Image (tube, rainbow, N blue to C red; front, top):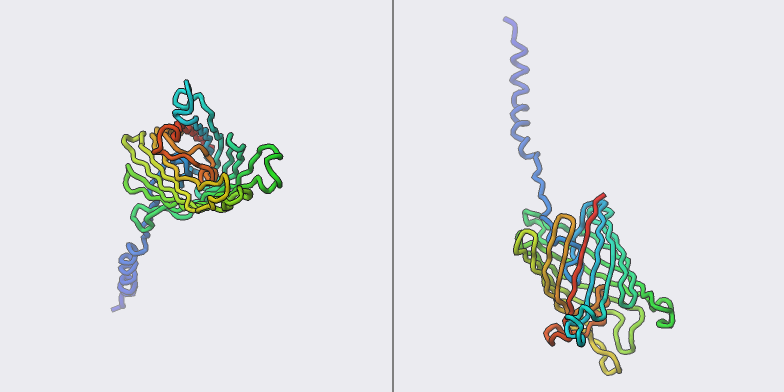
Length: 289
């Protein structure tokens, strides 16, 4: 009787087939998805957030800070008073790279800024926080008689934005920073280290309460005339968002809009009364290409 070679081949390859079937589930990798963004726009109130839009997105921002609420007679809560304004744009080159430009009324600051997404919080908690870099170079465009040298026009800001989306309703960020001005009054420091805290709590799907505290951490020599240590800033507001717009209205003790200006020049205390509180708003519009 002939040996059934076909049966031999089946018996020989059967174990390999069984091994392949057993090994298949181990070869399937589980994708750990990034957590949803902690914030809805590029600004919480006074400080940038880690928000990065999709590639080829353009955000246009209009930031307005009125005068102090009790700035003078018939001032209508500072609305008729001296205002500070910044208009800016931010373009997303890559899902982790954003460049921008803005122009501010006070000190005629023209800022060129960069934001980089370094780490993304994951839904599994394997990466518990988002970490982003935000920095700018600002040029003071006032008349040349305000400066002894052209390089005195320049200032710089560097920060790490560390944020976490704790729940669908609550997000929080901590922002250590370094601000630098090339020219400062005698007795002041060229560099100021700072720390900002900020949170956002959603009360409806499209409405949130926002809060920020901005704290300079470098002491100056106040024995020099006209030199005072900058004071911390506090802001409280509401945010209303849609898929392409964000509208923020807030009360703040900070008159500056470019970050390094707030860390260097603020002298308002939020809880000192209406003489130190300003009404402001921010409007953003997002375009996708």
